[in-house]
Length: 343
Length: 272
Image (cartoon, rainbow over all chains, first blue to last red; front, side, top):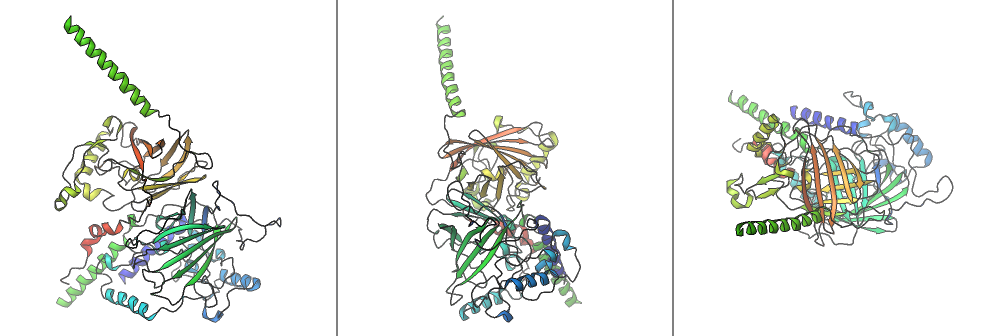
């Protein structure tokens, strides 16, 4: 109980901070779809950097309430019609939405915090501008079933920690320890209404992606170099990029067994594609494969919207009282239990 | 007479040496070097850079010393260095000088680097890890290997910090070939080195990055903090390009190396 409330208090504090620091998208902006003609009727041409590369720079938000996986009742339906999309958006803003919308912090709270103060009010929730029913694309719209050996591997890991969850910091999740917050994981998955800012800065031969969450920075070379040797394992993997037309393609391997994504193992292979579709829209797509986890690869697409900055510093570890409080709470609980037994 | 002659020839020789030395120094201070340009015509500072000195141990000159962990012997002892402070004096106010001494005496328990906290500026630059400058027209991003620290230097109209932060708020401009970065709103909890040199929340840092050859920059910093120092003071050092063909920043997420120190005492006792 005390552990739970401590953790949730800390989580709420983080949430509130994030909310304070997160700018809402420029008012009245309606994200446009991929490469549609501009108001003047001329086709939109993506801007270039001074050295001639597609210019992806700016501050983007991937904030969306489109669910990661498609709700079962929608079957193989990949897209909403314009009318359905308008109606769904309307309902979501009134809080009248089920699995079709992941309202996150804009969900009605059991304990009423005034989240509207931080821009979390439901009137601002937005579904992905591509009108998709889920972030995962394709007829299934869900993560493929996990292979039996992967299920066993993941179950074994959980079992090893069972009964030891509060023994030490090593038994706690990476996110709680500020080593790797969930939104720093790659691929880049929107958080439920928080920490959605990404700043892109390009220099000659490099693209940098700065995710505001935990000042997480990926410096991606685009000079055709190979991956680092296989024995070097990295939480965010090793990323190398290349340009294909107007698209930045980033290939990432060398993950650790701890940076699992949706139940994957360290053989996770990720390909991300970044394509600017309009002045205010960037389409982020990714495909993941891991022969030790899924029988086939699967893909997702998330439209990003240009927003105002700035991106602020998100220092997690420096103020991490959560871990000490959780462990201290566990030690006190053990002490009390021991005293009870003695009586 | 003979004595006078020899004295005067010594004087002459000394003067000659002095002249040569002065000329050499002048050449070193005002290099004719002109940095290569980026596509938009700015001096090109892109690359992976690293300091090669002992400033991270102590900004001031220091002899070699025994390290804090006896079991690590010579592997983790303090290497000697001539220092990087102009005049080798840090002008502490009296109370601050006492605090610096105390910091130094309790280094391993007080230094934010030991805990893997964000390093602040200028310490991030001369920690013994590489950092990468990625230069665009609007911003210059610096990614540091240590603790995944990062700064985005605004090269447009200067903006004001919304609040203090560990890495501060950076506004940059070009002064000829030199990138000048004005850094304010730095969190008071960062230090300058492992010798306990510190500052307050009134710290104001001005950095100057000047290309001095294809693979070296000169890094000069003016440090001002009226709550701690009686006058502004300067440090300077060269920064070297990591010229390896495969040079790349890797993850140094040191949180996990500091956890035992920070949370180890809260570990469940094995007897329980």
